[in-house]
Image 1 (cartoon, rainbow, N blue to C red):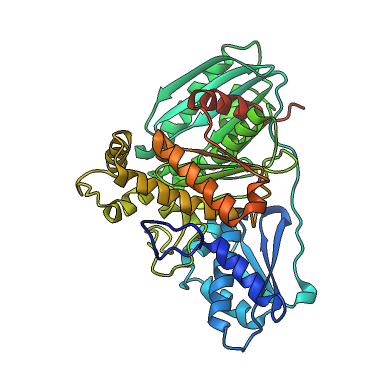
Image 2 (image 1 turned 30 degrees about the horizontal axis):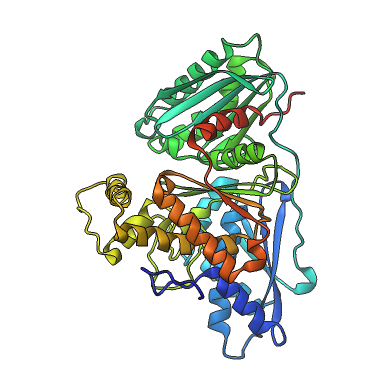
Length: 456
């Protein structure tokens, strides 16, 4: 490592591991292909190399491939893993992702999202999967009268957009995460959309930006409905946005997308470019992506669960039970985790958000200890961007979220740039890092959401 994570000396970047494995196995190694299959038969295939089976490197081979499978699974999403090129590694992955296995959480999550049993298939290189992705354009449609709705955890935003101009916008405080009755959510969403509709002569399309996972405009998993029972979720929540749209008018095109993707789309529209990766560092780490054709891909982009640290002693995420994943590196958890190493004692009775504010106040006062926290997160991020580039074509990286506000965000970005310049100079020449302006991002988000559906 050419740039040290000053408060985390045990940090082992996944991006460096990828590079080292390629170099070490270039002459004496074997190819292995990881395939992930998701809805509509779409397949993402990733080819890499490992040491030959049985030469004393089997444990390292498995550890490496298991991390790469995990990353690909949460970037792309899917209910089937295909391992081609090593029966030994394939069977180890099959055991890890079985029910009750090492990655039981991932099995259950993906089964629920894609409404299919999760499976791992082991095959030969001759039968290796090939990439087959969707490329239907979503967003950037600004014609006509549109509603853009942004469902946040603490407030909901809605805009009436006519030919790309927001003629009306409002934010309303609501409490979706603490309400167990789905009628509360339904009525709130309907009221917002009716209000926006009243400011236009007609409604030609409805676009929705919301945290969670969406397949074919259906809500599969979303934190907004945290308190809703599984039974009510299946009956009343899955088709909620489609049902609300019917009340606005028959046959109005609707497009629902993850809020991270819509944020990336807003950034792409603002930059007038493509290949944009958006990363939000807040309560957790959220991601979104616009590809080289300017499209939202339909991938999961759940970067919180993507491993960035290969160190097995790294902090474990309480939800998934896994180590070294993004949530503990690019969220308020990262700031809290690093505070003791920086010599900052945080009152245990404070909430995570309040602990973050303590560090941010110290940062605003010029405290060197707080600066070291942001420098360390910046080092994490520089190496993580290089790892994300294994799966995304990136020209622009947008960072946002409460962790990046103020001087801390500036330090973080500067340190990430130093890592890229020093360790990955070729990559550094091809991408730019940005912190978008908050006010323009808010307006941009609603217009971007409104631009999602294509008017027939």
